[in-house]
Image (cartoon, rainbow, N blue to C red; front, side, top):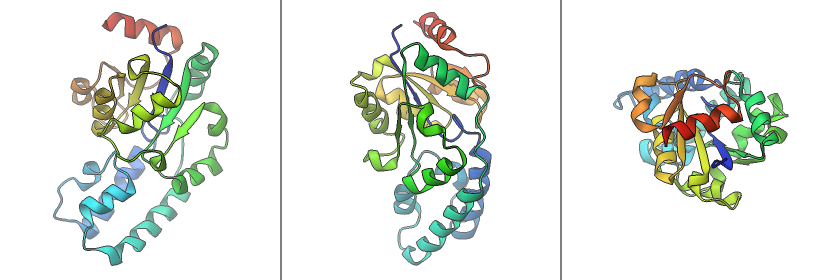
Length: 216
């Protein structure tokens, strides 16, 4: 099999959380940056640091309030798996494919995730967070680092993403990119990926290999 590692974004790919985040950031945008159209979508794939630098420069007094709000929000969020994730990841590992989460989320957010889903730490081989890379999506930095973590070139990796920034990041890295239509319509993400899935309920390692071979 050509693919030796599968790299998964977290929100909207492993967990069905994007609608919760969209609601939160829409409220933040309306309160602090009503001048930015579709604020809740503009920030997808960005780290907190980059969101603050790009959209809240000169508003430093407000940042602690926003950070406190998101910390409290994430503690109460529901981290439900996108359909088929656990069985698909387990099947990949049984077939020798390395697996990693590559997320713009920070360790503070991940602490909330682990409290609700402690098995996540053993489900995946590696979990890379915003602290592990210097540039956030759509830069390919995170996926290049994830591939390097396994001693692989990106063209031996498949990236699973849902957001436009994430899809662009995966493609820029040189990996094979599969888009999840959990956040955007299939027709909207198709130009940014090699294949589109609605979820992982009907996918296993053999099916993944067939998808990739058919596209070559």
